[in-house]
Length: 98
Length: 479
Image (tube, each protein chain N blue to C red):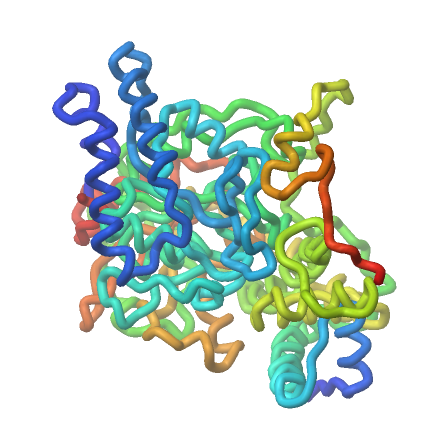
């Protein structure tokens, strides 16, 4: 069984910008460990270190069509702010830094 | 099964019914049944009646298409200008995009009528739509069971006659699996065949918009309307796609059977798929056994890569630019952390954590990089197989619809139910699920047909044969 320490879990949570405490943390850690063990099957399939493995892309992107970089009229402010309560035509957000 | 769109379109064209009248009928059905089924999470009846009035004008002027005036629905992760699009997540509560997804823009141009947005797993992460912040949709065949996921609301709506068709998204089987559970058609085209512009991202190299409909010809009609080049999606095929007209003749069609799809299969499902294979063979199709040994690794590969992409895609939800924000915090970092912890549900948090883990220093080589290598192996195996045969026949799901509450159990067991659908997403292949009978409890069984990239024609033709030959013996989607 691959294990994950509390310290490691806390570091991951920080990177993911999530927080877990008490019972929820224990439940998460236990399920997380199970999922990592499940994912570990890839190590049985591709043995050894990956230094020598050439990354061949490994995704489905067959096309990467870029369009001409032309200047176009952007959406009007009224449209962009239609889902919020604008002030003087701008987004207003709650104060983040207090 | 039959073509609901064909039937309704004929009625509209002959003016036996107007689109406004038809839309009102669907609205009345939704008002009667949605309280129980929970298929729709946002209703857009005013918009629908306006769309219907415009459609009636187009039909009167002789400018209609087969989709003009037909009431339909979109999954809650497809952006609609000014209409709630929340991915069934608390973090996107109240979110109204200021633009339309390309698929909706194209359907609007055809005169489609949008009845509302349908229920789904939060950010499309799940197999039963039970991770939705609005609660799970129920299966119209048996309301004590799930409608599947993540496009469960769309499948339930089509099956119950609450929409003529639905658009969903399929990242690991999210259109085909609910179609199999509810007894409808679920079609996932080739990656890149339909623009993803305006589809809220989960795992960008797997995500594909798909179609839920009552019949195969309906699916082809919708596909023809929405597929093709889009300057706003660089991964979309840059050429216009040929129109698909599925044909019912399967004589000489080479059908591959890969035993790897049949491991751990419920015996009733195995028997139903075997019966279907025999019908194809009797009609002149050539059946051959093929090998796909790398399928053993599809689930770990999928969950590693999809979660890695999800952890990056969902990084944008920070309480500043979208949706809801935590009330109590003491600084920016804390605000972001609390917002995300309160806004995302458990399954989404789990997948973000797994994605963060497999991308983090020290583990990306062991997991992420190896998964990418294996993905190439899997794609190469499919390439070899499609050098031998035209399509593969397989079950869509190893079991029929789960009882409600199932996905709250062991996460691995839930992930294992994706075993037959995930391969097509890993390799970007077109695949369709059509009904092929019911089990002893009367629950629908799905038959999956997988084809080579951009061979939608072979996939839908084989599916149409299933429909016309009586393999699909379930009615659905008829108002």
